[in-house]
Image (cartoon, rainbow, N blue to C red; front, side):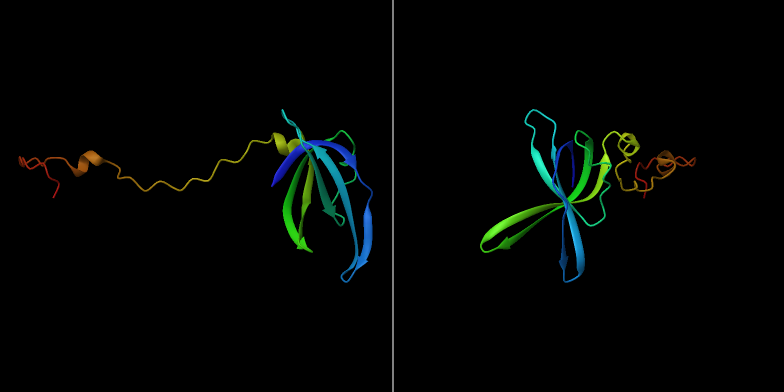
Length: 128
């Protein structure tokens, strides 16, 4: 999924030690455009983020995955960003690829030649 918005808040980097080794994550909040703007908190894990993008006021295009989990009868949802781009950079202004379309079935080159009346004067309209 993707979301576009203006960066309004960057939270402190969190880090720790887990069974698979050290980890770190960065939470940030963007505000969407529109008549009813929404504030959305996203998380990026590890070294995947470019800190130059995380400047308050930047317009960002964020690709993310949504994941929910249950703990003690309550549900918690994480929005895990896996790619952050500056909105308005070269990638966004590039033309979108054409949608996939199945190839059309092959058409005969000349329909008229299939149904032509022979020179002998056949008056039968049926092609068989």
